[in-house]
Structure formats: C-alpha cells, structure tokens
Length: 145
Image 1 (cartoon, one colour):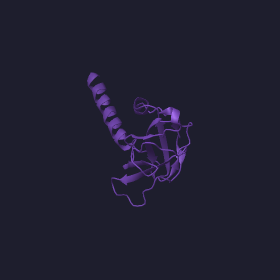
Image 2 (cartoon, one colour):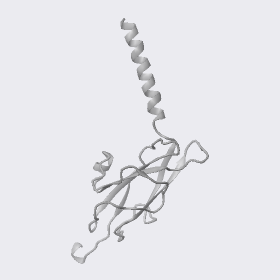
Image 3 (cartoon, rainbow, N blue to C red):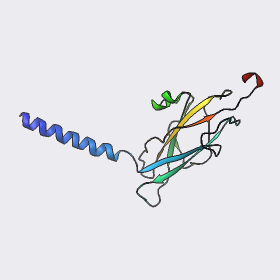
Image 4 (tube, rainbow, N blue to C red):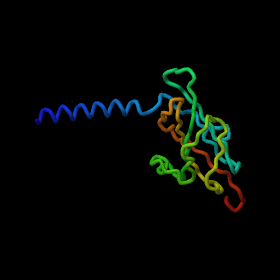
C-alpha cells in the first residue's frame, strides 16, 4: 500500500511538472519602452505611450499577441508581487504592442513608475511577465524642485 501511494505521488508530481512547463507560451516580452525610450526620466506626457517587442523562442510562423496585461506600480516591491497600484490594465484583447496608452491613475510630479507586461499568444497561452522597467514623470511645477 505504501509503495502504491509513493508511485501515485511520483506520477502526480511528474504530471504537475509537465503541465507547469506547458502552461506558458514560448513568446517572450522584451525591450520595454515608454515614449520610445528605455527607462526614461522626466516624461511630460500625461498619458505616456508604452511599447514592447515579442520574441517567439520556437520560431512559430504566424505567432502574434492576441491580448496583453500591463502592470504599473509605485514601487518595485509592489510590482514584484504583481500589484499594479498605479495601473492594472487587466487582460485586454489587443494585438497592439506599440503605443499602448497609459490609462491608469493620474501621474504626479516626479513620480517613479515601475512597469511590466505579459501577453497571450495566438493559441491563447500567456507569457511570463517581462522584466520590469521604469519611467519617471517630469517635474510639473517649480515648487516641486
């Protein structure tokens, strides 16, 4: 009986590993940009444009982004916990990876915004989160210096 339970447990663990490795798409999100720049400081646009590139690690033809989710957080700690306290776009059906308009809370003077993206591929599989990036809102008033 004990031997049977051990075998079932090993089988269960094996199945979990197989599903865990197949849960994500092979599409990788990289080269995050805000207003066409990497980690820009002093953005004055009240609705910055966010962009990213997709890399299909298996070279599947016809691979596209079918949906995306953008998280923007006030701290890197929040972002690492997947908390978009400034903006969580949630899953948005869109193939647009260029000039996605920031639509979160109003940004304040000299505010740091940490952000990352994940996408869904042509088969509906979600990617892993991109690495984080940063943009900083510009100083809006002389009194903010």
